[in-house]
Length: 409
Image (cartoon, rainbow, N blue to C red; front, side, top):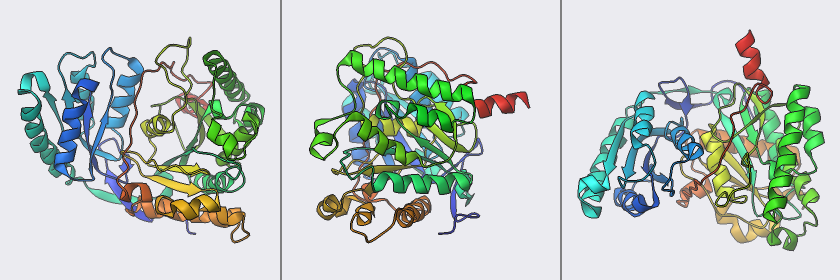
């Protein structure tokens, strides 16, 4: 595998970032506008026109920031905002942020546009205008150092921590060495690994912050009465939360940990970052437990061009905006679900491949997908998206030591 130099091209954005896709988002701002937005996307019948949205009616700072980050993601070429008209979401502020990013944006308000059918007709025409404008974006060379890559595991079993997860860790090490930014998650699934992660932090203070973030996760899910260890994990051969955590941890590879970020925050530089997705503050009704699709969205909001999704039991989900690459840990699962999987890491169990070899295959697949090849979930039309209520405090210099160093330089 060759990880040096530009090997593919991307879409140059006004802020200097480069995207590997050029999606047009149809974004609804309240559940009451969901149906109309979905009908617009369906009528467009274009894989690049994708549906995202926030179902809540009352305002939420986290959701607003997430939507702004999503709507100005480097894989996004333009946005159509669909509002009912009386929700709490500030549609004007969102439209202004998108316009300031240099992307085409239009807003439709159902209560003002004449209702369902009139808004759908106007929306289809608007989406086509935005799509045509986005198609004019200049293509430029990209290198691995331009990429932000995230990883998540879902439907884990006893093979996940032996094959797929450590193979992704090998890929992450290669990406970090090439100057890329890599993000792994999440603190609720890393319980028991906090001291090991702290020892890899680039500053002692960051190590303490990592330990505190895992302690918060323990408290949060203890209060809720459940955590990330699901019945399907036990059916798949995992015995304890700690065993699952060790397997999840192996996705991070062996590179130093450069920071601890919250959803929607952008990494201040290349390197490996841990994402804390457990809300800050008191446990509140409506703030959900762990959800793979929600966490994919959170990593995308932090800039991920591609998501590496490991699974042992078999998960078929994908995402809007950024391609999801499936790495299957279990050879029996791969045999049943080959049409949904990109990489068969289960061959390691059968003695047909090595972790280093599969890690190289994953890196090659990242390059291929970044170059325009569809991942399996993309080809199947998976564009799942979840955005819910949460609350986070902004990360300070302790969690972002590279940003602090740059500001003091």
